[in-house]
Image (cartoon, rainbow, N blue to C red; front, side):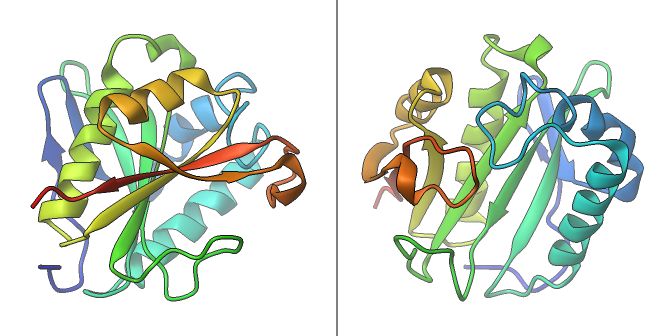
Length: 192
């Protein structure tokens, strides 16, 4: 069952700590959100310092407005050994999810990004797996969705390794983020 309002508790994994983003994470987030290679398959281009700060403020406001029923949390992905923020994640649901392909209210969505220096080490899978577990057990979500651009094979493999399966295909013409790439919505149902 979903907890009452307030920020979620940090999540610890073998190599990572996932904790709610704070305003102090601005510079660390810019390292990857401002990197063209890191954001190649995200809904935005590389961010400048002002754009990144505005995006972070929006994410923090969404987290502060979250309730037991509707939530939108940004997570810093930190290396346990050093405390370095190497990526971020996002977990959310919405009373009015974006079109096309509306998502049911009992479901949640997952997003993630890692700095390219940390790709290929299993850290993305470790972070995404922890957030999926939190959505199922901490929020009571019955289904988790994740969107991925079709050419992003590493992210598609990551999702499939966690048990996600393709749910819906979107053509390049249906892309609302301006990348003009085809994409897949992946789905993972909570095991009963």
